[in-house]
Length: 325
Length: 298
Image 1 (cartoon, each protein chain N blue to C red):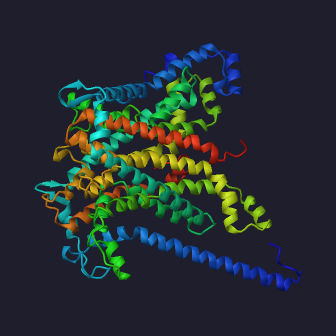
Image 2 (cartoon, rainbow over the protein chains, first blue to last red):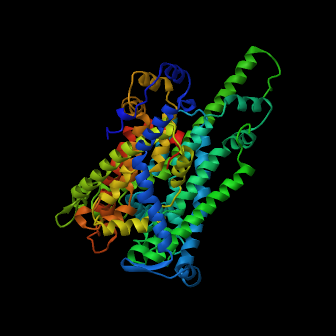
Image 3 (tube, rainbow over the protein chains, first blue to last red):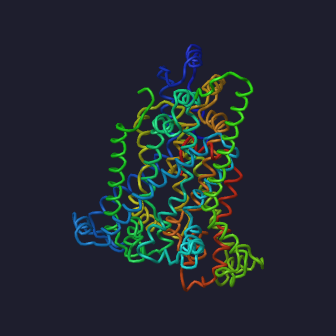
């Protein structure tokens, strides 16, 4: 890779050197420099260009095409127009189920994660001793929460003989098999997602620490109580971070796969109660080998995530507070 | 809160002491609350650790929270998944993929980031916007054609589909992270190198990269954690049992025919499987929490 070098180097005239030392390079006007920069930049970007074309753009176009075909890996795709899309929405009840399951999953876990992460972050931001230790411990679930191992653990924790029932027994509540129960399986998976609120919390904490102490002092002198200080100072100032975390969580939760797969052994059961969208897509593509059908599902997911993100950006002007702007 | 009405120093001091005590009490209460919350959250993990260390027959049932008969037999049994297939193989597979993924991401992402952060070129704004856009793309819209393509060139059941994209800077997030970091480096250093006649490659390799160590380390750690935990693509691309990685192998515990009646073995292997992630995290904790805090990462 050392081929990207000497040949592209600009010959610097004395005056150009003097100027470029004074100014930041992005303001340079020398055309020789610019050309050299251009060429070098494209060379540095070469791997990324290759990736963008070969493993992002072309596959995306191909999947758009496949979504209008019938394709079972063997043989050639046969064009069927909008048939896959029509079938998905009119005659595939499992697809509709998977949408509902995903909406419930996203709709409960995102607000809960935000609530937990913000509450704990605010509690930690009060000049507490051992902040670093607390922060790390709260973050640990985020590190391991997405792993198959924790999915397996969760299955036992919420199983008939699991820890949850042990704890409930202390309060005299009769236990049950949560994870094999159509009513409680999805909440158990949501609980696992909420369990990983530490990642959002760390981001909140960083934002909270940037709020100047003097704001709170001034408010205290004016007689504001703790809730008012939170409501009138903290909350408005961290709306950009709430926005950021929400977008991040939305994009991630729409694509959740592993935990639903593990607790239901890949089936999305019981009675399709944990059939998240990605899981159903996986089943269609890699178990039924309905590649065209699954491609249509992928594009619907892309559009859904795009819409959700766009909605967030649109709504942000009404509730996100960007300092002086 | 101007509640002190007189200026008697004795009273003032008493007032201050009272307030100090209340503050301390509130602090203690907060500590208690946080520790309780953590206890509830981490209880399942602690339960698993203790279960893995007690005999199979004592895992479920009223044997008390702390095991009376400590044992490592679960680890021995779990390690031997079935036949002569052990977790040694799965760990080797996982670590090879992780190591290559780290090298790929460090190289390719830092090269792209150098261009975006330190060089001027035509179409920069658009390309940067595209790069950011790809961060939001669900993998599913690329997955199926990628799979078909890799299948046709005979890459399925090899590690190539998992590793090669990293060398093509497919993880745009890390480009972004490095761009943010490289932008903040002072320009004077590179200017001095230009005066000395350093090539672009030398400026990148000798000046910018060494200064970007914090961003590179964050990238390495997160690439490890993400790749090690990545179940979806490994499930799809690695099907032969001897190619399997740790998460894919763990999945076999779900299979009722896979000799998985051993809960002790399951817990022991789950515990061992999260070990490397926790180890990496502890080793680089300060760096990481800083990185997450400034870049926002899940």
